[in-house]
Length: 468
Image 1: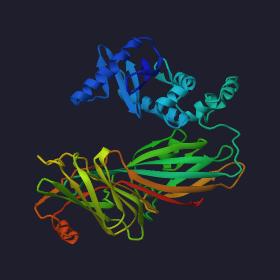
Image 2 (image 1 turned 90 degrees about the horizontal axis):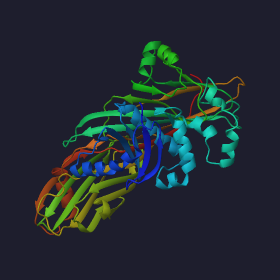
Image 3 (image 1 turned 30 degrees about the horizontal axis):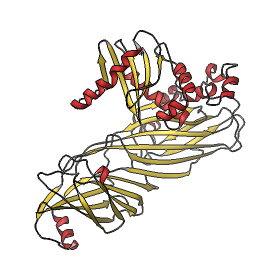
Image 4 (image 1 turned 60 degrees about the vertical axis):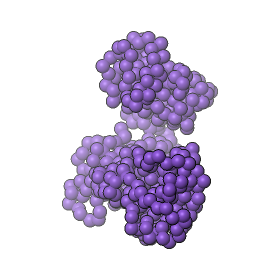
């Protein structure tokens, strides 16, 4: 990988903290980073890798910070970026929120972390659980921990300390899935997949071994079972604690877990996902003096379920004023700083339809200003609901002392980072002054373009069986 130096900058390009690992790149070269970035942004050609002479800048932006790695070699860019994102993860573990203020308030800890995370340009210790054993935010603990090397550094099980004790032994499993959708202007799903992670919060005494069973199709085929719904997982990635040889032989996920919170595995499911909230929208313009937007939202999930805290965000013209709203349920408001009309529905039962009409004044209309605007987006959560059908079938907890432990699981489905809904508004031109809402509703049903949008946060929690 071989990164020469790592910098943390504020949004003005000022260096907050830096670490020179190799000394083969002039530290003053960082002064060229922000001018290069601003030039590219003006041209609309922002690139993740920029060069000045023979020095290359690999950077990411997080909140109000830039994290930049410099190198003059032909380094592996993907590994450099993996390291930068790991730095963000570790700093967030320490400071909760990684921003300019947290860096300024924790200079000593940040320098120590940078020293341990990388050595001579190569990643060294990036596991936050290990780092937290000898780099702490309390000075007294820091001095004591320096008297000896933590056992986790030299243990065969480096991710877990010995002698951990809890009064109540529990393990919590979160199955978190992100839905990625590409929807065209006709409402057809062009591509979709689900990216999932399994996260753990373990509060178990001693050195337990855990065995996790999922409804993995490959496992059922291997064992000759075909009962119930199964899923096909691809691109599976495990935490270092998982015994890969065991998984390869019989698809059993067997491991000694880290204490506290950790990400056990990630995976991808390539499957068709239908939109759970279906949006239809129409724009009506009147004599270039005002515009009305009609929106219909329909729940396409089972009637027994209810979506909570639904928020529909509708883009409006940038010069709109004098907002007026009428909704069949919930309430709507205008957010001028974001050019949005936000429609909020506290409770949205499955199979139901609701309407919202927004009216705005327009000082002047010379062109179709809604073209090229962001798509309508929807945020909501549905309790006791999962999309992919993945299930945690069992969790076995084995520890030599033989204590009883309680395993719990919850499912969370949410929108992914690559969710894209391409849509266009239907434009209806009318000159009448104030037609009734019922008349508009009829027009709405006849002359609409349909654009499905899904942003989902689902939650489910229940006791797991401890045996298969």
